[in-house]
Length: 260
Ligand SMILES: Nc1ncnc2c1ncn2[C@@H]1O[C@H](COP(=O)(O)OP(=O)(O)OP(=O)(O)O)[C@@H](O)[C@H]1O
Image (cartoon, rainbow, N blue to C red):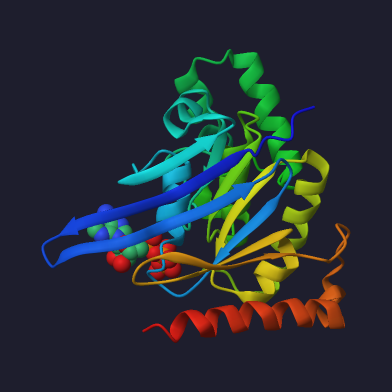
């Protein structure tokens, strides 16, 4: 068994050239993510969370430094379909059914119809949407649509799931429920998850590792290894251990703001 990191960033920087001058979205970022980690990225708007996730997924190219995914370049990892990506908004095609949306990337990949059928059934069960295959996105609530978009990202069995604030637009009760379900899915599948959030409780509840970032330039100010057990009922949020980790995240966010 290998202990090599699944994702490794070394002195990673990304500067966007804009009409207003250079924007240092990421500066000298170093991070290792191991197999089965659940890593949250938290920080104020503009600190480079989305950019970092997009670099991992080869949707942006760094201007300096190095990133490897599964030991190869992000580009090779993308070609090998190493990850599924979940966007902030579900982004389901309204003219396709839920099943049709999940099927789409598989159709593009040339997967056989019978394998598509099996995958759609499997991932809908994983996100507790069995029976919704023939519904259209508009027939589902916001939380269900987001679950469908997670199902779509799971459909080609990638070991890495990159999620950009997938529950940000949902109300708190729905979000709690989805957080519980996501943890359950993570425990069951042993996937490696990168998760962007603005919420301290969400980051602490979900993660094995919390990466605190700060803006101008976008950088990592703290990496917190969670001491919480893998089994996490929602009530764990009232435990002293949870509150202590949340304090450390808050302190990290404050320290980052002090640079402004
Ligand atoms: N394509 C782009 N061109 C120019 N600047 C960009 C581009 N993408 C991002 N930026 C800038 O890079 C910085 C980091 O953006 P990014 O979206 O990664 O931050 P974020 O932490 O995810 O923010 P939010 O929490 O608001 O989503 C911001 O200043 C943003 O304006």
